[in-house]
Length: 248
Image 1: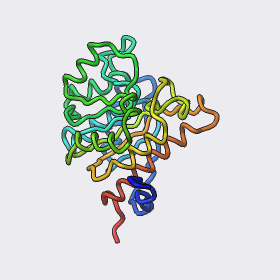
Image 2: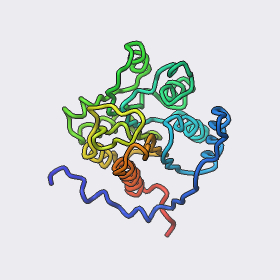
Image 3: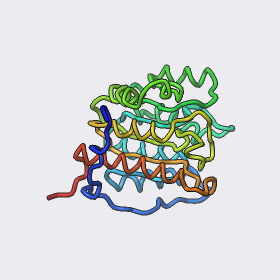
């Protein structure tokens, strides 16, 4: 059990002063209007954990946070860098969301770490991303390392500043999370993601999203289980950090 986080992390999440605020209201067929609506609705809430949906949702959530905190750090689990300048000819998609976020100054790329990357990516996109200061930890690097080492590296990168967590379920290998629209082989296994997540302690997290779960592609619902577990671990981290605790 040396070096294990179990069971120490499992704080009582019922001590958190959280509520289910329901679904974001969208304007179907109107992308930019919907992004503005999500931003406004997110802005009305405090510490937000958003579940489900396209990874583009991170963009309006970060815009809302920027009004309160300025540029934030980011820990980012995904198979894809999501820093293309366009995706199949469209400039605003789940493949360009973080290029937009960096260009708008919503995140500090020098405090941004991507974990689990393994997609095909053009050299110019990779170069642009690392030239901004983003740290990319590939899935292979995770496999050749340990959860403790990866978590420590992420902690060192984001430091003491305000930090956002985004977890795309396709960061996990399709063998453990088949329910997603863009699966990539060779990904993180659930034990690795859990091991990294439970060690992300003493980070000043200000919000999280868990995205890209597609239940129709997973009749066994193990993808949803993995996603829900990552969100619950995040909430346990908040308890440990004293965020959003009930008075008394």
